Image (cartoon, rainbow, N blue to C red; front, side, top):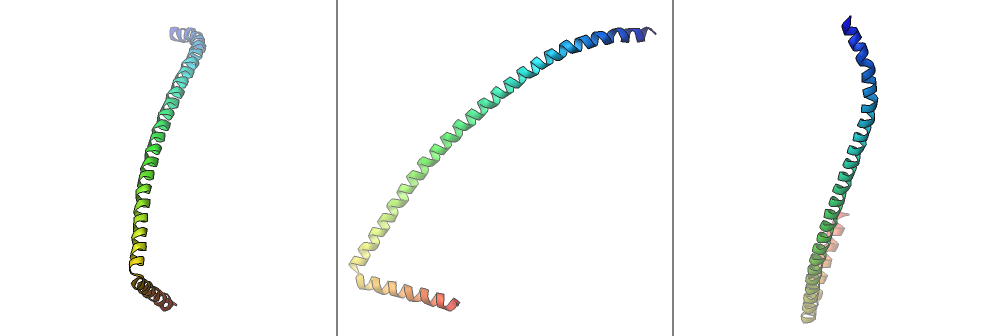
Length: 110
């Protein structure tokens, strides 16, 4: 019988504690949420900065390699022009031969 009285006496106290505990729990939860939000915002900022640095590095690399490729293409073009100027007849005959071979290959597939 005393156990029931003890439980009955504890129940109202628990209800009172639960209300104050609930308010405290909300404050703690809100605080933790704000901390998590700030942490996530900082991580996003760090990732964004790292991505921007990587993008800039990649852009510089591609510009450098593109410049090198362009310079090589110009050199090959210049060498081709010089060859045609030095040997015009041979160049025309080579171009004619290549054209005939391509024409035969295309005609053979039909």
